[in-house]
Amino acid sequence: MDQTLPTEEEVREALRAVDDPEVGMSIVELGLVYRIDVSPDRVHVEMTMTTPACPMGGLITDDAQRAVAAVSPEGIDVDIELVWEPPWTPALMSERAKQTFGWTG
Image 1 (cartoon, helix red, strand yellow):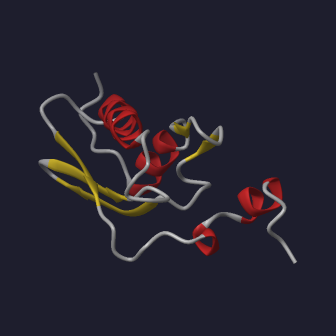
Image 2 (spheres, helix red, strand yellow):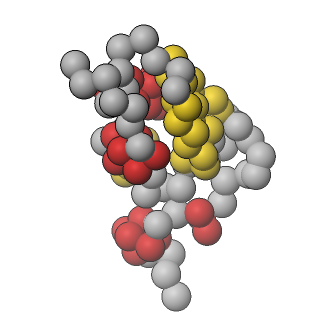
Image 3 (spheres, one colour):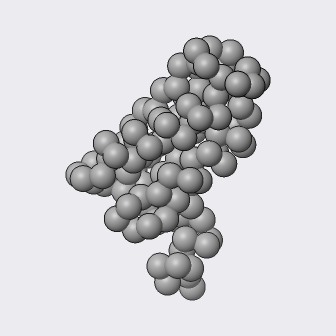
């Protein structure tokens, strides 16, 4: 396995494969990924859900964990943290996601 740390963009790209199953769209496109920090011993991702009551939160964070671990060297801690500040709004979605849901002006 390649022991090179992933870049922030490589982590973001891996997270593009993680879909919110309720809407069938990537968590990156939905604007759920807030922050990615890569350090020599850890990849830390701060993300949110569209609502704290999201029934898919555990599944999505588990999928995110697996996706990031797949692009990280063995022995690197992958930490997926759910945060609620700032609250998610549709304004955080990509233009493509907004168009998919008809939320463009």
